Length: 94
Image (cartoon, rainbow, N blue to C red):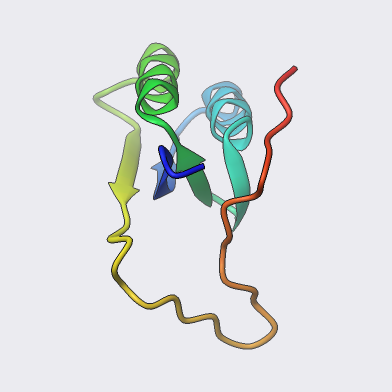
């Protein structure tokens, strides 16, 4: 999976229906996370697809969405019982 980078996807959505749609879009790519911040291993094509889906869901004047690529050279630090994210050997697509 060397063609994937680790991203943090975070959002703040004002409408419950848009919030559900954004959650569904992001969780379809997520390998972990909590509340409105998720860890996603994305290829370039998956990144573009996620951004396009989210752009159709959110209202630019009311909502916020952030997709932040994490530096692959940075050391992972997990606190408490957290487990550092790991790119799995395979993904399920439905």
